[in-house]
Structure formats: structure tokens, C-alpha cells
Length: 516
Image (cartoon, rainbow, N blue to C red):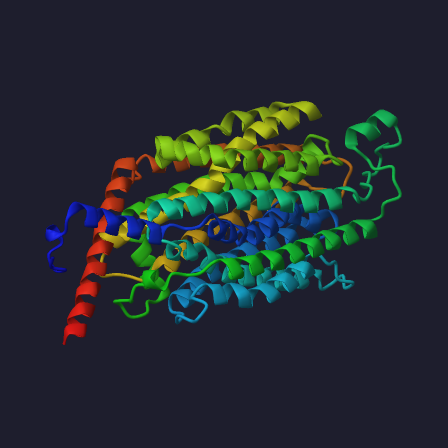
């Protein structure tokens, strides 16, 4: 039998070779779990910051809403800018004995942990608070980017088998939603037990029992200092989990060097990278579609604590409502993984994203009924799970499509991931800044027992009307997204043929060299 004539191989030999390749590309459950655990720090810290940073800056650090909006916008905008920068640096990083991505994760962890802890510390300098939070919020976002961009790109270096990558992504999304649940639980339950009494506006009688119950005014002896200490305690616990997850990821995951393809092009500038990724039609449509839908959920996330505390009147229960959403989302991740496998990813986008709209409408139409609020938020968590899973499950498909159509352009995986995160974070920074600024214009009262009607109306718009409009815009864009199940499966087959032919060519070259 000749090596250069595959057709001369008998069927059983071909079957054996194919089986060996499948086994080589397969990931163990342990590897998938260790990889998935590495995604928890991003979601744990992200959920704590997303749900609690705005209310922390306003009611605990007691910053003016205008300055709080500046911190939120600048921090997110800076975070967005660092993503493509780190993406370029990662793509140019040399291979080490530990891989290309993992060293970034290890070296960024200590500074990320330190800066995250200092975000939740109220400095004893009244005039320097804004600068303090800007510095450490931006520093943390930078270090978090140095962790998350390489981690996201690591997906492409676990296996060349698309099924195995999808499976690893499902593990990752399950753990990340669980991480969001853990972050919400730790921050919410520790802080929820130390909520300082609200401040009654002049002329308002809060000693009347019925009014006190309505506003959830605390009757305990908790002070603002207790609340500050609770936030620091929660951040300390989260920092410990962050370090543990980074150790597990580094110890249990190995990058496959054979999947690192040599780059055929010189290093690109920011503009060249932007043209590269946005010039690929499926990627541009995917990013724009998820840009709007992700923005909708970020608006909901950023303003939900204030909405529960003031508009619904559940000042002492908002952390439990947030917990219910995350529990629901965690439980539904396996369902959405099954759904997208059975019916396709594009169908899952439409069903999963639109299912939240009725509950967004119900949420703002409800009176202050705690039981009904729990029911509605649990149902809304079903859609939150889809929002977590689908973007990261569909990005590898777009990268595969790019590699198939541009076989000579290689080594750009980190750029694709970083630009997706860039667009999402920049838009979220704009949305959070505008939403906090709009509360300032509406007359938000820091740590007040009640808020003006204009604030209630603004919060209703921010958690219902605006997200619904953004979701509908995103779904309209997905109509023209070209990678359906037929295209995806065809790309998978063609890309596997391309990789097999490359391996055969390398084998033939090696054999020829040995003969010589």
C-alpha cells in the first residue's frame, strides 16, 4: 500500500485512521470542567459589578449620579478599548512551554484581584473618590481583559473538532451562569444583611407603620459603616474564588500546539484588524445582532437593583429577586444546549431572545407583589440563559467560516473574540452612562426612602421599553445572518477535509525527508 495514494487503503484501515483521529480530537470531561471553571471569575465579578456597582456608587459611596455615570461610562469604554489591544498582543505572543494563552491568564490574576478588592473600598478622602474609583475600575477592567480575551480564544485551541468545542462551550456556559449565580448570591446575601436605613426626604413621615413596610425602611441598628464593611467582605470572598479558579484552569487545561497555525501575514494595525473582522459578512452580522440583544440585557442588569429597591419597593429583598433570575438561568443552560443542537442555533436565538419580552412587560405592570415578582423573574431567567450561551456558541462557527473562505489568513482567532467583546463593552458603557445620567436628570435622591415619579418612570423605561426595542432590532439583523444549520454542517465537513489534507501533506513531507 502506498502512503501517497489514500484510495489504495482498505476500508478497515481508513476506518481505523478516522477513529484514531476522532479519539485524538476528543476532550476528557475533566479537561472540559477545568476549562469551564476558568470562565467563572469573569462572570462572578461581572455579575457583582453589573448588579451592584451602580447602587453602591450612589447609595454607599454616595457619589453624585453625574459622577457615577462618568465612572461607569469611562470604565466600560476603557475596558472596550483594551480588548482589541490585548487581542493583538495575544495574537503576536510567542508559544511557551505552557502555551500562548495560559501565561496571560496567570500573570494578570494578582493585579486583577487587588484592583477588584479596592473598587469596593470607600476611601477616606471626600474629594478624591471619583479619581479613586476611576483608577481601580479601569485597572481591574484591563487585568480582567488580559484574563478573558486569551481565555475566550483558548476555545479554538482545545480541539479541532467542532462538536468537542461546542461541548466545551456548553460546559463553560453552565459554569459561567453558575458563576453569575455565585457572584449574585455572595454579593447579594452578604450585602443584603447589612443595608443601612434609607434617608427620608424632608416633610415625609416614615414613622407610620404601613408606610415603613411599603418602603422597606430598616429598623435595625445597621449603619453605613456596616454596609461598607459588608461590601468589602463580599469582595474578599470573590477574590479568593477568582484565584482558585485561575489555578484550576492553569493546572487542568493544555493548549494543543498542533492547532497553532503559522501566520501567513505580518502584524496588523487596529484599523487593519477592524477591516479584517468586519469585512467578513457573517461576523459583522453576528456582532451587530448580539450587540443589540446583549445591550438589552445589560440595561436590565445595570438598573434592576434600583428598580426593585425603589419602583417595586423591595428594598430589603432585591438581592433575593436577583438570585431567583440567576438560579433559573443556571438550570436552563442544559435545555438551551439541547435545543440548539436539535433545532439549530439561529432558531434558538429567535425563541430564546423573544421569550423574555412578555415578562419584561409584566414586570413593569405589576404592583408591589413579591410573590408574583419572584414568579415573573424566574420565567425571565429562561431567556437570560439563552443570552449567555448563544453568542459564545456561535462565534466559533463564524471563525470556521472565515478560515474556510480565507485559508491563507491564519492566527486571527484572538482578534475575532476581542473585537466582539470590544463592541459589546463599548455599547454597554454608553448605555450605563446614559442610564445613570438620565436618573440624575430625573431627580434621583441618593439613598432616599422614595424617589420622584420621574425616577420611577425612567427606571421602568430602562428595564422594559428600551430593552424590548433593542431586542427587536437585534432580531431583525439576525434575519440576514447567513450561517444556518445546513451551512454550518457543510463548513464543518469542508474544514475537516482541509485539515486532514494539511496533515497528510505534512506526513508525506516528513516521510520524504526521512527517505532522503
